Image 1 (tube, one colour):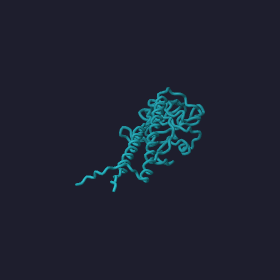
Image 2: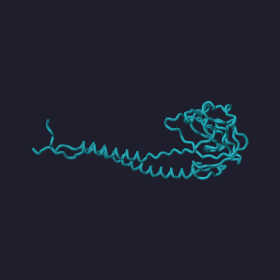
Image 3: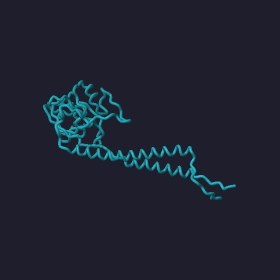
Image 4: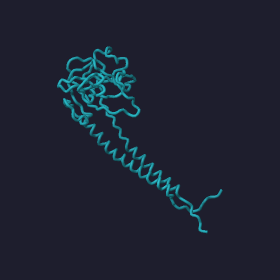
Length: 244
């Protein structure tokens, strides 16, 4: 077995350089962008936490800036339109499959209609006839958290008006399906104990899921850049041929 002891020198080819240098620069830029996103997300999480824990305020009759109210606790008074109730697909709760119930609330202040997410019902109680105690009559005041609708994710099924349940919140489409007008572009998620109704539709505990994984993403991009540099250097070291 012979060992190649000839000295080697770093002499990169033009092709390898033209491929590697832009790739490394892109990876470093993506890593830096993730660091910036990490700082932005940390600030966003702090701002959202401050909103969630703020005292409830009355929901304006006209919400001109919905984003300014997202995650804010609010109060709204009106009368439930139980005949317009809708079901929203929900994650299983305590091993039970079911829905979240959205009931339009006709506001008492003339502010039109706002959709109220009243909470979870198991599959065997999706029919309102099985839970007459949930059909609250008269005027009610709901305390809840403002949530805004978001576009469907890549793997989330689209809504199908007329189906047994909605896949995601879409106030304009829901309003059209129910023949409602003046529906606010948001949803009020009733807080627990807000309008408790005999064991069902007891509201939703505030859950703000804003994961901050940007540090891991930044480390990944920087690590890929370093790995590519090492591979480039090692692969472009060439033997020095002795002079004739």
